[in-house]
View 1 (cartoon, rainbow, N blue to C red):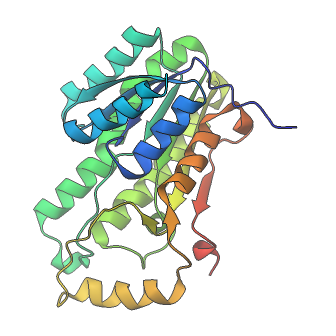
View 2 (spheres, rainbow, N blue to C red):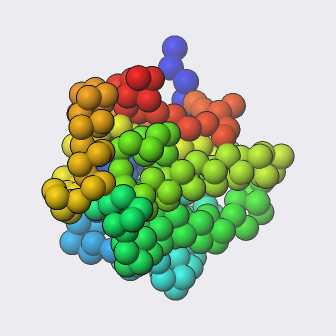
Length: 256
């Protein structure tokens, strides 16, 4: 007997849906009958995701813009509520990689871009979504963290700090709002085939340290759909008693 996901008809706001894990998750949510609002900076990629969903009979719309801009955040939440009558699920998936830079090599531009996209933008989006979930007395929030949230040897200083921040945010939200019916969890993906490229300088100190450690401990390369399955599970009623969890999806990398 399978456990129903309860996602049919639910309003889902998902970021980073233009490609990779975000697109795979959007397609999975749509197959479960969820109604989607997709937020991304990549207009063409997001349009392709929307087209794939609607061609299969699903419901999806998009807001295009930089989630580092509060106006885009507010527009995304308002549009989801307007189209679907509320907001049941928020998936903070959008993110960027750093250059694998060690702290001493990290300039302000790299730090601010990575922290702004990977930590500040999800914070702002969650803050904007919370009043609607609180009014409804329920909600599910899921973050895409990273293996870098669990260790210090899989990314540079900026990305590692941002993803550790996501873990702290996930756990704090779970405790703060559990009595209001809101669950907050995160996945911690291991190496995944998504097309994201790391612009690492090979002669830099950071990549020279991280590369050999990563290669020696990680397992196989995962797929975007394997990560998406975990995201959708945590958002669904099948995970109704899961709150404050950081779920490694990494072929045992975190167990090494």
